[in-house]
Length: 566
Image (cartoon, rainbow, N blue to C red; front, side, top):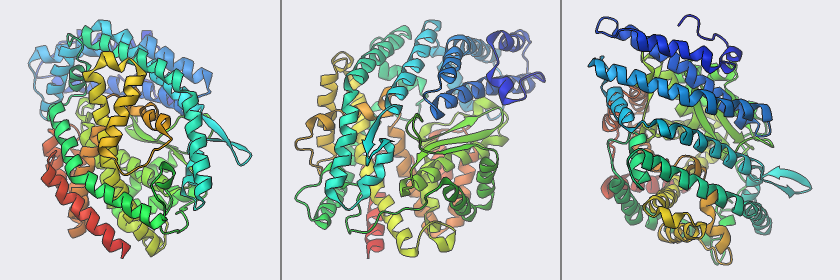
């Protein structure tokens, strides 16, 4: 393993003929209790390098969707390396499982490996490669969406600050302009969607799940601690507990704005007529102030963020031909995170960087774990790391505490964040319930018109406070613009579950900030070595789907909003 690539340039130029001998060596090596730890370490180093190669090539396509060379190199990885590497990884999993060895701290990874081994089908490797390429096509469609505004060509993300302006006519014009541009791609996304869905049905069938892609996906996502029925229980709890609170929030906003009904372009403007929060103009201020906040939360976490700044592991500003969204990924060989986002000077950008910073700290905290297989953490808890950090950082948003705002604006920012968190649960339920409908009715879902109708039903169920009169086409095609639905099916309920965990962490912090942060960090350091309920418990929370747990958290949030408003 001493001859593994040492630089990024060497790593991303790696070819399968260069990689394959490492796997063959591990496959041929006898495995026993005596050499088990060393063998696992060598396997980990190799897997880390292949993973980082793929992530770096993927990131290159995201930072510039018009980079044809980056796209070519990433597709070559998907075609030539990823399927071959996954086949080789499968052989090593089988070798370890056949050995009967159970290394310390490896109980959960072994459980995961048994599931992955049972799920593996060589016939699915080219289909999974095709799925990744379709995701790249979706990114290109969305990344190319621009509009003419105030005499300039802007991305749809760059229109978002207009939605915070006081001029309702101008807000509506910007919203309709963006919606019209999205609808222009409706046919292309519908066509891509049918290909996605047919491909996933074939993947499920190959893995002996018949037409039940959801069952296949549940197993592939390593969801051992809850079921689809638990998700539906969570939907019902949200409908019972959160929807009435969200409806009150919408009604209060409508009254304060003095409008007869709440339209989609009325959701971001300040209802009291205050100017939008504008925390920064350049990303330099965003990174400096965020660093200061992280140092206040915990000095060690602040140091980790500074490492990212100094090593160029942040790509924050929005620009043309940059893929949408924000995320944190990990470069496993270097044991470093990388944050990608599209900042345009809004408070939401601050929240996004705090959120992705939580993911980054997860990567740093897990560095002591010896094996790459121990780093696989369910997103149900990985999102506690990110959402929890948004709330743990809240006391430091004021400039006096190192942040961006006056004392009043910092209170306003927290109140708005809590409101948006409450409003998020119903939207999360729309996305998740829609996906359950899709994969329970895969034949019907091939017809995009049926998907439009299903999306509209879920919006009416969970978000009754919004008026989409005359905007039926824009409303029912909202599912087209949700990246998760297309690229990462069933990955969304994690946000709702994790937000419930994060609010419990925040509740603890209101009593003992230092203690809550210490528990949070201890939980992050466990990586994927214990089940989800234990990760939550270590962080000081309960892994739950029930109305009672949800109600206790929502009540605290609503009470805090009222105090901050007063």
